[in-house]
Image 1 (spheres, rainbow, N blue to C red):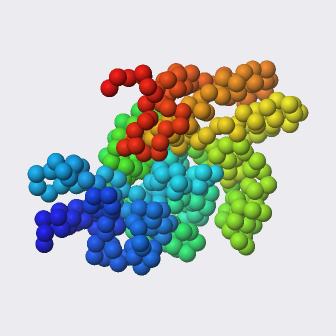
Image 2 (spheres, rainbow, N blue to C red):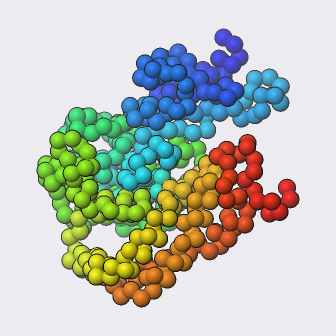
Image 3 (cartoon, rainbow, N blue to C red):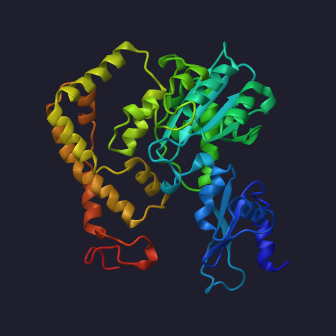
Length: 412
């Protein structure tokens, strides 16, 4: 073998279950079984645009980049895997549904309790629950049906939870990894969760749920290969906080998709989702999937809706402003990962520029839920000012084109 192919196999052997996209100059190439798989699945002519299609078909992709300039390399160009892309760890906006979350589920089962964690790293969302003492596989199936994750990592062999495994394989279009014991070491997982979110966040919480959180953190860190400190908020929930619905009930109610076509059109979500922003669309989907059972919370939400229903002019003014709000949740994630371009920064600035107006519109509001939103709203004035004075208003898409920094901002 040539030195380059020796290097390829050294890296490939570290990621045997992944399709390795190996950087050669301006292109990514695949070899041997990877090339056969990709060409068969994609009718392949060009590599890069097809990552999304490989993920959609249930494959995991490892991106291998050149770590030095080929012109300056004395011998073989140094290469490393810089990113692993799996269905549950996508952050690329063009590969995601902007109006739905993209969940990774981790499930820990120790024979007496089941812990579950659901993460959407594109929006920095993470929540967990547990079933103890009285648990059933139907509980797990119901939670999976609620969140519809794209990827599931199971601590045990599938045969330990046969009903869950059968449901996942027959009913869900999802990548399942079973017996992933490396991620679910109890002491290590708990320590990782406490370090990420503080001991106060995990104290008194179900042990199995915390282990599921720790497993998710390890998997996310390994795939993203970057700092994940931006994941700062963790919530735990008891399934009794939401209306309990089994799989058949959800299907027959057609909450987010119809029974016949599996499309949004014709579902309850289709009727209710008039959101101007993708963040709002994801939130209303979460609300529909998790109907409240607490009367005080229901009434609080109703009062907020009633105030906007009764105030036509205010509602329309706010809707008009929200048309300019871009997807801050996913834009900020791109900044955290270091993958945001100048246009992403301008998008953040555009959204920040209208926040003072929105906050002012809410100043006379009386319902508690809306007042909480208004009082807690950061206008991001410092962020807007920094971006506006440093980044050109219409910058190019890629860094190598230049022309991104405003003249006079910084001499270098």
